[in-house]
Length: 434
Image: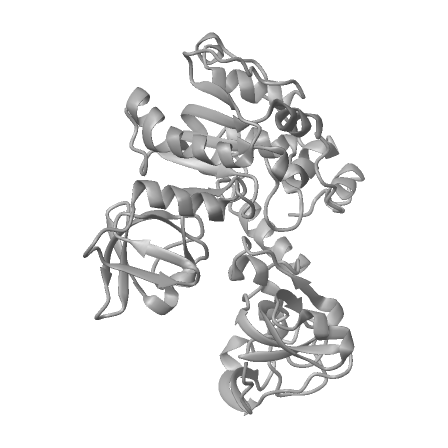
């Protein structure tokens, strides 16, 4: 990548609030021995940034200065060998002193860079360097808006996968013992007839779900040892067996949820084989190849990052409605609303015949097919399997091996997240605080 000599940046000229910020052109900085140069892709406006611009938060001694305490971007240059391993990688990053990240390029300390996995979009990554003042401001605004005659009720499932970002707020609130908590554990008669609910409760309790081969109900297990055979079974289930028996649309109603992106049973490969079966290339059919994927009219696609200009957000599902090679545009139908993408913007989309269970958090589908195989050994966890099973409304089919299911059920220890919230609540340090 060629680094330009100059860049655009926002510059604060006096501590009089955001109104004193100006857009300027300035030289691209050079990283020092323990620093890297980041091509900034996103940087949030936090409460601490606003306070900084007003001179009320970590005010430096010099002006003008570029604000922006945290952000996300790609490392394009290292000042010494200490940062060379980061070059070319997308990172969440933060500054400690000097110019910040409200610029096209920024110099940041190597130790303040956190490499980001692919499933974390730029806007999430830009907020990964947790800002306590912003968190306080958000909680304060929420609680201040609740009338004294009202109560704030938080509803959630602490046993599902945790948030992509840092922290464990719901779990900490419950574990502190300070906040009155009710857990819904009773399965009522009507719900008890659902094998999906039976399986979910069994997994959540650390017990094996029913893996028999009953030919009725809404939860099924297909035992397959070989990964290649498992791929074939998944294609048969999605394209033929489930639509024929349950009358569901293979593209609009059935979602494959997998623990990982990589491998034969990962989302990338499953998307390719499912696309070839459900929406194969046809003579004269318009298509476009970009960023490692082929997009055709009728393909199911997933938006992978927030795009406020197009009013589409990370996790939105749509269908490709048109491909215009002359205009270099692709049109996607999101629940009846057409959104147009330039071919250069297609890195915001991925095929969505299959997606990771992490991507499916907060979503529901009429039917889900979940590969659970020892090929995904490193990802097999109880909360992952529980989250996957609870995504299905009418039908859940697990494809894999009983051993892999047993491994996931046994691994009930969620990854520890260090947070001071639980202890501070338990010690009454936050009593009287928003």
